[in-house]
Image 1 (tube, rainbow, N blue to C red):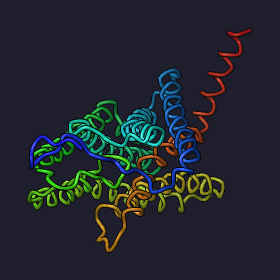
Image 2 (image 1 turned 180 degrees about the vertical axis):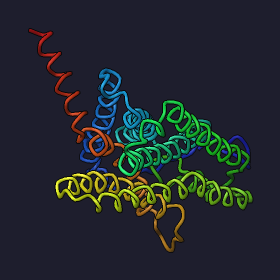
Image 3 (image 1 turned 30 degrees about the vertical axis):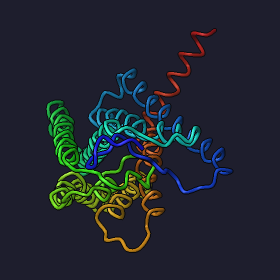
Amino acid sequence: MRRENQSSVSEFLLLGFPFWREQQGMFFALFLVIYLTTVLGNLLIIVLIRGDSRLHTPMYFFLSHLALTDTTFSSVTVPKMLMNMQTWHLSISYEGCISQTYFFILLADLDSFLITSVAYDRYVAICHPLHYITIMSQSLCVMLVAGSWVTACACALLHTLLLARLSFCADDTIPHFFCDLAALVKLSCSDTSINQLVIFTAGLTAIILPFLCTLVSYGHIGVTILQVPSTNGICKALSTCGSHLSVVTLYYGAIFGLYFLPSSGNTTDKSIIASMLYTVITPMLNPFIYSLRNKEMKGALRKLFSKKIYSSN
């Protein structure tokens, strides 16, 4: 590895997933399919929502932004990972690594805020249906998305600026498939106490508080739907909320286990698996859980295919 001087490096080495070379083809094909499914599924959501006026509602407004975020979030890490797996050229430049870290934090935080916005929208729709149109106004929806972007950008910029001031003098090997903030902080030979403090405090703002808001929203939803006399209504609402909560649990559970719970011993493989859950798997599941299972979205999908078939004939 080239070094600019004794206190900084010009590139890092991403070790990636811990598997043997003979397994490379299988894992490459698996992650390529997952990535293509993520991109195509989320882009389909965006096209359907933008193209069908019946889907121009607050919930689908949030879901379209969530789909765009998931597409970009997955694209920040997976293409580089696939290229490394195929070529075994594992290096990434210092500037590229810092940039990847910035966009990763930005989109991860944005994902968290948007999931919370979807939960709040469902809370208002189910718990206060008569006031839904008044509460979930266009201005509020735009404000929630804009606030999510501003807060996520601020958190990502703060982490990146603090990271850029660190020196990396001995080891430039990252035991991960992307430039993970925690892994980079561990590699530094500088004082990282401020970085550790900001990781914890910013995590409260960007991860823990949205998670608690999401749980409170679905808690109120659960209490409300249990009071509905219709068994079919209860089953439908529980099915929807259960699906949403499964994604929330997968996304936040992996983050909590990776960044906020104390670790012991050699947990590199576990960290990689936990990172894979919320960077690769969750963005793929979101289109199916939040959107494609909805009756309105299925109708828009049938309408789109009908137009294609009619135009081709």
